[in-house]
Image 1 (cartoon, rainbow, N blue to C red):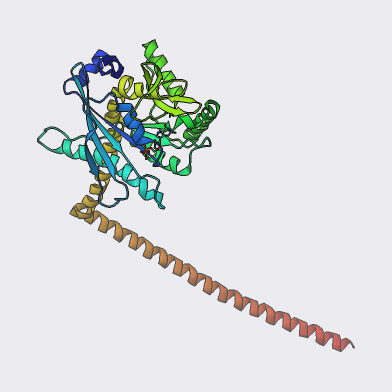
Image 2 (tube, rainbow, N blue to C red):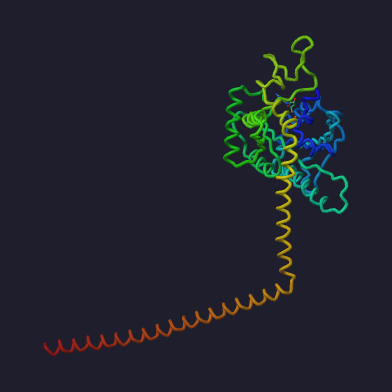
Length: 374
Ligand code: GDP
């Protein structure tokens, strides 16, 4: 891979300065059902880009939900003396379990844990090197069914989209015809909109026509379709090799824009939008997490302060007393009202009895008069 293809050094100067002091760390997560070609894709993406071969595999297991093992692979990218520490987070096994909730929870927990860990490190007085595994982009692989998103996809994508830069991917693009792919993409876009799923959108920079056109073309292509290939390249002409999958009818080429969006996605991740992904993770996702955590901690501590503060205790006692008195007074009023009704009913009954007696008297008088006439 040539220097220009990775493109970190092509980042606009001002932004370049922001990261160039310490180099940068970029953490990419792949998620989605197993067997969709996530590992293959990661290898294809970094095959010729990695300075060091994929190494340092670390398995991440979280206490309660250990149904999915999250695997962190570290590597390094270097270009014109500019280093990028790369963390690739693979989430194998997703969607295999009977209870699918348990299979995606560790992924969501992992993202939250990294934000949490950064918050804790920032609170430490000694500001040494921070361990930072915050996910800058999460590629969510969608099965190329040609129909629509599954309820499980919707559920997981919703959770991921509020926590990190979510980039939906259609896996194994070579299994759908162009027309089917276009229809599938448009149905997915409709569901994403209707379900309010937050996905990463490249910012459109109005003052730069070329980059704004590029951003628009990236947005229009979402969700990106990809093809992953094996390590061996295919010889298409003597001495000319391509990454792809060989079929009896021809080759599905990874880097052919008519076959899939691999090049667009690679450009977004490693060239044009890497810094935006890093910055928006800090400014949007991490800050939202932090604010939410601090707010809930404050509400919690306010409640506990109220419970333990003698002043609040007095106030609370006084309020309790006031309400008890109010309730008592109300009960008394109700009792009196009830009593009044009873007395009134007695009086009415008595009146009724008197009226009935008078009627009876009158009827007897009438009878007597009638008998006298006869
Ligand atoms: P993971 O479980 O999502 O990591 O999937 P793997 O990377 O292990 O791939 C599962 C299977 O799908 C393997 O047999 C791959 O060769 C195959 N595969 C990977 N990418 C593609 C692709 O783009 N198209 C096709 N047709 N098969 C692929």
